[in-house]
Length: 342
Image (cartoon, rainbow, N blue to C red; front, side, top):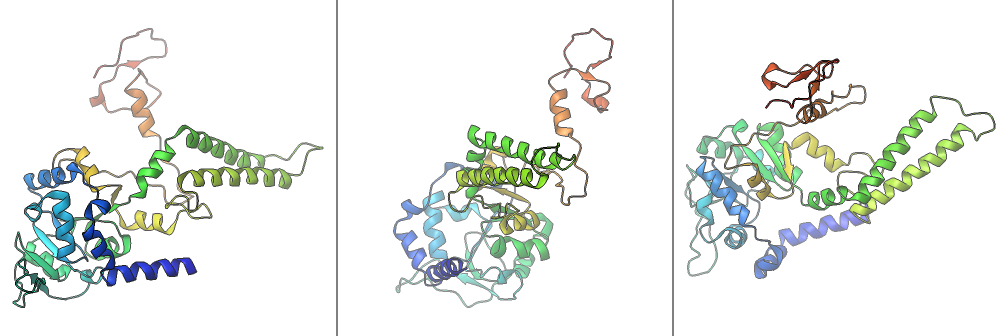
């Protein structure tokens, strides 16, 4: 608890004092990683008629330095709206007015805010403060039409998902390493061993131990110790101290993972990964239904059926397929070796 409080206070201090922003701005190449796919993504979205916007708690100066480095000096042309110092999450529930940011710093070298009322959100302009109600009114956007992508579940995503009907996406940088580790042969072997041990634990209780053997309790204690060892090893491969961000120390779903499930519709390790799903807004995400409670029956293995069907002949007893799929069906007594039609 003490470590958590110290880290929280330190992060708050470097943000509120501007210390972190000044450090990043002074050495932007060290802290920001360029990706040519980022500008490509934004251009493709714009060409397909999608309005994109920046909504950040950071100052315009900080955003401007970073975006010039990542996307070029004309970065504001890529966005329908540039909204800074938004004070999320209060942005989603307050009625603070928007203030226009003067893009010329003037003789003082200080960025100033204009006092005239903001009645419209214009391209190539930057705004400060504001609230979501005025944003939706001035842009004509509707809640279900908005996908907002952020990297902080509670500051960025929870409130718009709950109260404004926005679709939400999360950037989770830890995903890259976790997925890479989970795909290694070592991790896959440990996962198989863990599943085997857990199945043995369940089956041990279905029958009494043979005469002369150790008591069931002693056997289960040994097998549970093996499970703890396997879990610790797998957790250490992901991170030697903290393990996976999606799993708690008790091997349950972490608070972070629970929040992702509740408030986030799609998540990825980098925004530019969306480029790989086709140009503009052509790809549609259809999330799989998750089994939420232990009493719910598992979903039938439809994916396995389809994958198997695409690679071999289909027996009539396997699965009732739609006639549009037009596979060659093989009777039990058929010797036909023809390939499935496509």
